[in-house]
Amino acid sequence: PYLIEPQSLFGMNTSYVSTHIARTEVNTVTISKAFVMNDLFRYEIFRLNYMNIISNRAQTCYNRLWTKVPEKLEARIADFILSHIERPSGEKILKIKMEELANAINDTRLGVSKALNGMQEDGLLELHRGEIVIPNIERLVP
Image (cartoon, rainbow, N blue to C red; front, side, top):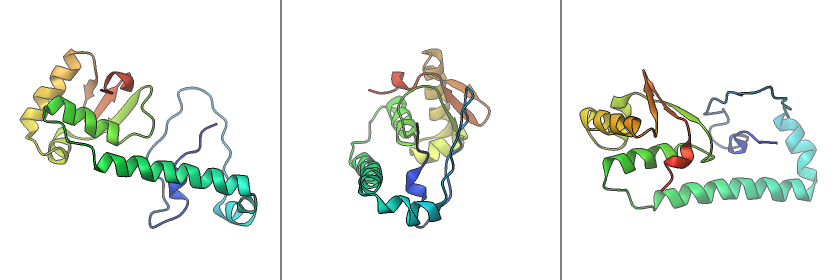
């Protein structure tokens, strides 16, 4: 079982921010916010598990804010990609243009293009128009 974006249930933005695509047949269960509030929150184990999930997410995001930014461009690109995923396993597809990525990591489009092409030659990722496919995200983890 996998809970998709539990942090989107409450707060300022209650919409999903990511797109999830199943590679195999899946079954889903959708639970309304009203059911969570009126029924599930009655159970202490649900409240504790939900708070642990949200706390873990918040702590992970907070810790990322304090990690040192790598100097090498390829490492900054990998850091950017890793900071935008929830689970560092399997294939990931990041929909982003090189210009946007360059702005996000404070570099030039040309520098990012060269670094990405080098990473592609090393088999770390695949470049497509407007997206970066990472076949095995574990290879980007330092």
